[in-house]
Image (cartoon, rainbow, N blue to C red; front, side, top):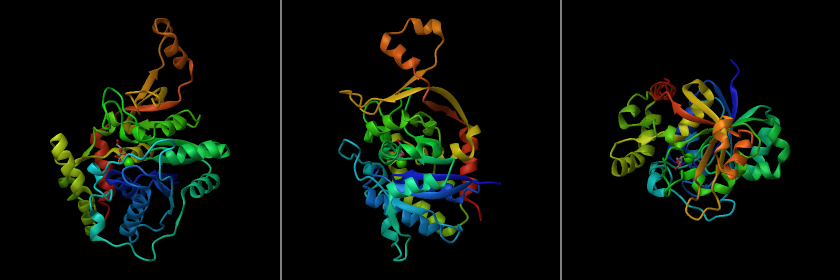
Length: 327
Ligand code: BDR
Ligand code: CA
């Protein structure tokens, strides 16, 4: 079967790391490149985390993807990190147990890698699991690459009153709302996997016991411990959300998700609502007539996004664990 070519753009925290491992072990994907962006931690640390994860997998995968380091700061704002969730190194303190080999893969510039990979891979899917800074600046500067992108699948945004950063926002959109708005309005097909859906899927210490490869199991235990403890302290369960993994599974197994089409924009000018994602559904004309003018204007726009509004969490978990547990 022909594999789906993908590029991962990550801010290599704990769930990004699980997403990378899943993507590299999935028989359905051909991961061409992994690029990093500041978010959970600073971009240099994200790059080191990606290299360390690749090091854990080099004996089980045939070809390592190229790695590119991207933007240090959001388009217009100061960086806001999530070290209280992912620990100072972004992967739960696991870096103190390992050292990067001197012969690790070369680190390229993310912009060059993204443009080169898209140009040489017609129909590529981009999976973005961090702030959208790299992707927004590339599609603004290199309009010609847009036609080669089949789709961008994004972990980001939140609806139905769910939020994890500030009173109304999801972290990736909060960190760089301007970038998120540019990408959503780029005209490229977008699938959004928002926080209210990703919070339906949880990983726990028991799940890790199902992984056969002992060194990978140890690595995942070390990466997730701090993240699990964070959720125990703040949300009262020992485990953690698999946010970014869902964006990868949305590419391998789209049928697990129920989707609504609509117009989504992200608040960047608001005084109180930084990063808020707003969904304008397609309405029937009768309902539309009762709406204020500014809402009607948005509704008249073509839907720019397909938004996941539910996931089959049981099947998702099965696929995730089976892929990680391959002997
Ligand atoms: C998102 O924020 C980050 O902390 C996670 O890695 C995920 O991409 C969830 O809001
Ligand atoms: Ca992330």
